Image (cartoon, rainbow, N blue to C red; front, side, top):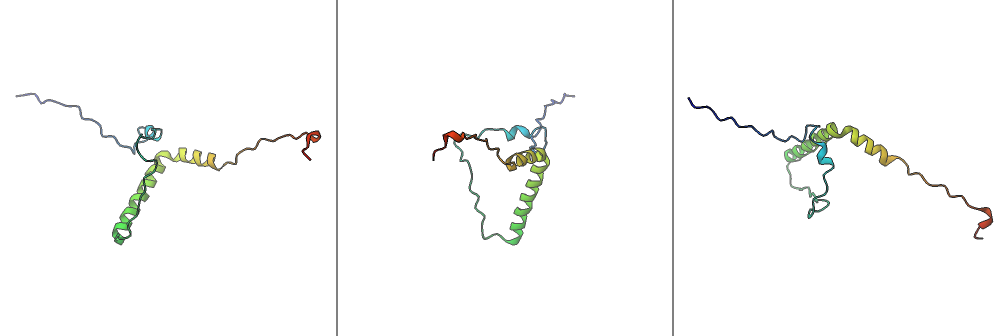
Length: 97
């Protein structure tokens, strides 16, 4: 009886697993790619096609929230805080008028 050769199976990368996903968040912009990709929405979709895409986007949003919830909340909080203005002291003897 011949021995079966066992091979180590590569684990499939799953971006939805939180301990693997954060490295993607800090990946630098790839050289040669545009900073944004225009996403035209066809106007000829059937209602079934439109709801399928809508549900896909909704699922994607929920998955991103599940993975990055704390990071998104922290970033949103930072962005909504007013910027502090440095106070400038004016010397009464040095007025321009």
